[in-house]
Image 1: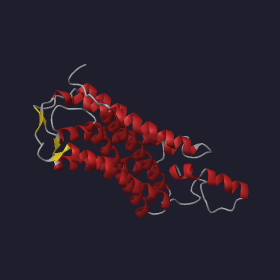
Image 2: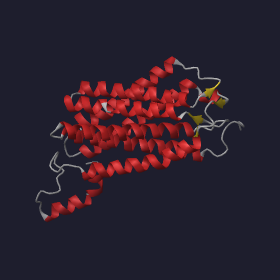
Image 3: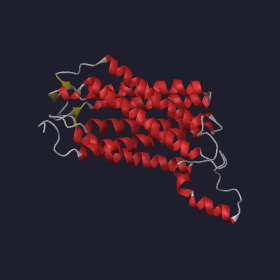
Length: 276
């Protein structure tokens, strides 16, 4: 066995799977708040839904990035510059607001493609910024072809999720919740694949140290991503469902129904709450 390989890979795999789960939840919230934004009657409501959705999407994907990096067994202690890390997070959140703004203005396939491309490229840049914030030594040598591929994969995943969840089959119909769930999965997988390609482009495993090992440690960032980020996303999930407007797409729970139909709604309540 290679001595450089981890003896117990399970914790590293669990970190990566947790990152994937957070990415799926973030994509689900992004789609949900984007749908809520299209139903807002005024600019204040639109801005609020877009802002909260962007916070959920950007924060969830940044947490997934941190967990993905932490899942790599490196032979040195990795630290992060707090200022650079905060800049990368702020950029990811800001760019996450672009797709819902575009689609609330013009809900068309072309705008889903543009919005997905903007966010996909932004996430690629944010992941590169995350690695840069670690200050690897002697320094990363980027492979441009891998970075371009990462941006394309992340953009494709984000665009597919936006189209499927907001414009295509997830917009209306009896199977809309299934399509929205699938959209969140596809978006998360595309973004996670893009993140992995960025890490491959930088080849972090060849580094021997970190210039910021005395600042924010990997353990502290991992705990933040694994504990605080899920709590924030759970809070935003509750806000999304509490703020759901009945009757927007046939999901009203206030309309009078027959007893048997009411019982069917109760049986589907968990699915409806997850994917309104």
